[in-house]
Length: 385
Image (cartoon, rainbow, N blue to C red):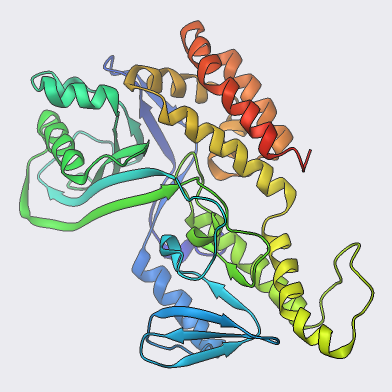
């Protein structure tokens, strides 16, 4: 947990998945936690203050790169100078540059934290995915939309009377509209017998996460972290743990470069003093980008992009078949896929195992959608293989 256990609001020791209307429940022997965002933010801000970080309360509007450093122009007219600039503006992607069209899929979700008289969920088990659609039996138009662009219920039960519920579109292009998600959630809660007073809604969440798409142009002078650096898992939408894990590596890489750094392999002999001063920031940022996106990470992300492209093509029944096979592979492999901890070779083994665990019908669908994607994957990775 990266030493951040004190920032968890609650931890569930296990989770469950409902794939169809049979009511059969698959238990996932993996803990899940909800992060207390206010507590995490307060902790990070405290660490920044203790470390002497200076804050400017303004928006970054642009950056100008000079021979020996960069200058960030802010919305209040101030300018901040530095040797290296890190863009953490998320999906706004304010400063980082892209040399390809950014065409992601979108994970959309609408959720609410509720105080209720009762609910049917076990407070000790988090509902990771509920793909049932029997709550739409009397609403043929909504059911038709859901079968074409499926959504699932995600539940965090905090107590017998307090729950967080969210209707989620795993990935779609374009995104499923929020009004549609709100309607589906309302119908689902009504079917489950969960009644609540709108005035007692503790929080309301509208979530739209771009997934996949092109990575930033590399190398470039501006460094990136989080959403602006392509760190969202293209198949799941997860990013927080990946970003928090990458921050120390980014900081270490920057410190190494500011302290002198290592010359790139195959680099030219030392330049004259004036040329060296001009090339220094470019060389430093290039080395940092290489540390943040090594070949293994690039290969891994392209595999996850393939997973996203497959998910984009699935209807409700095909999605159920997909996850029936997904949760049938070894715990090591599906855990590692979700947490982005599998190497590229391990992902190949995961893919083969996934295919073998799939039904004949699902295999036929995978062959029609995945084979072109695999060829595209190999083409994109040709320089790294």
